[in-house]
View 1 (cartoon, one colour):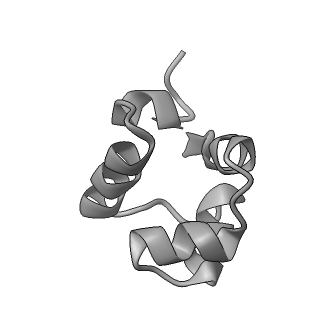
View 2 (cartoon, rainbow, N blue to C red):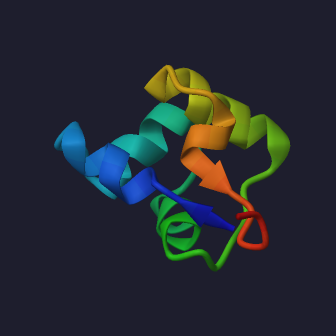
Length: 66
């Protein structure tokens, strides 16, 4: 799954650790999501969307979708 998490995080000058703390996950989880090695659970995707005040679809995109 493609995502804009790294860009959104960088725009706020947050480290992966900062984002992980805000989302209550490990820094390794944030790293894996940013690199596309791990797809977030639906509850985690909702937490990310709320944190950035954006719809989930603007942060995460299915790689098959156009």
